[in-house]
Image 1: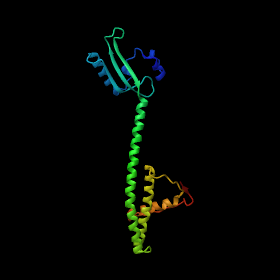
Image 2: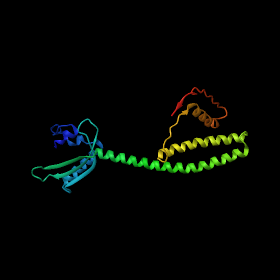
Image 3: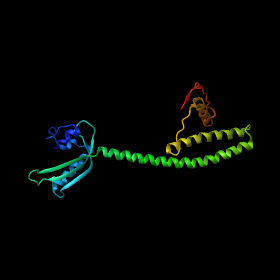
Image 4: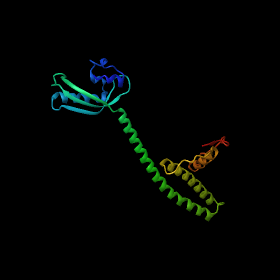
Length: 212
């Protein structure tokens, strides 16, 4: 048993001598270990490799190893199977972080495309709503509806700006916003979707509160 075991995993080599090696392997990986030993013992191959197997020598977390099994049963000074382990835990963690970074980059690219297309459609909606408001007049009932459309479009534009900032197209521009204003806009959005028998009463105690 290699002396480096104590340095890397905090357990003296002499403490594991005589303990079945299978007991150190993760339960889900024990079948793979047994299959390798059976194949090597048959003499059909001289060596086999398991690229990722979990081993734990102490009560710490499982460590991932790339393990090479070499049959030296016929060697007079060995008469057994030599197992060479290479710790790949950090390597796997780096691969996972790299995959996550690629996923986030793909999501940002997708968000940028969605924001661009949505902004084009929103520009048309704003243009037609402004033309309609001019046509019917702001004091009419229809004019009120057109104003609500424009307010909704403005909220959608802010959402597009946030998506664009997430995608890297734009940068966040943080500004203080009155909580009462956000509350009023939320109430206006909720009212049209409420059933006729449901009333909504709001008590605003945030008139002087701002968030950023």
